[in-house]
Amino acid sequence: MIRSAIVTAAIDPAALLSEVTTTATGATSLFVGTVRDVNDGRAVTGIEYSAYTSMALDEMERIAQETAQQFDGIRIVIEHRVGNLLLQEISVAIAVAHARRAPAMDACRHAIEELKRRVPIWKQEHYVDGDRHWVDPTGLQSTGAPP
Image (cartoon, rainbow, N blue to C red; front, side, top):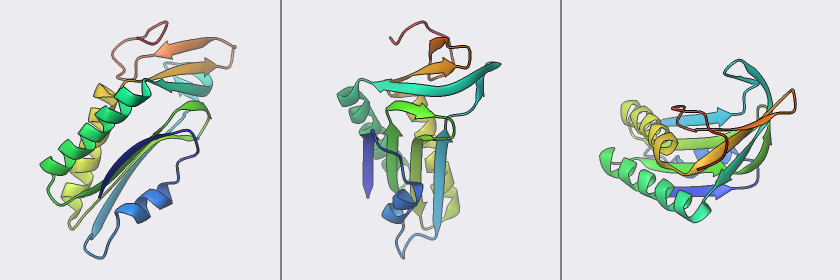
């Protein structure tokens, strides 16, 4: 089981867990990224995520495939949401299951790190003062607009 998706509706972590879990998987790792209320000292009210959808989905699928090859025997589902999200809404979720805990946890971390580094999904933070700002998803630099 290997699946990735870019979605516009709310992400359901329980559904992702059900999708990867079988009687053969003794360990399941779940990463859930949510919109937080402060970034770089500025109060945030929400985030708008934008993507070059076809390219982003292709890269997410590559990451899922590469992760499955690197961590033999895993089952993995990756979903990233686009659109306007409010505080505490889920922006990304990754569920990974394996017979053992170490591969499940290591694969989950690998997948989110690669997603943040490689997938063309941008976020525009919305601040309490009404200002909006595009933010580099890798955390390496701040930008005024998506690349």
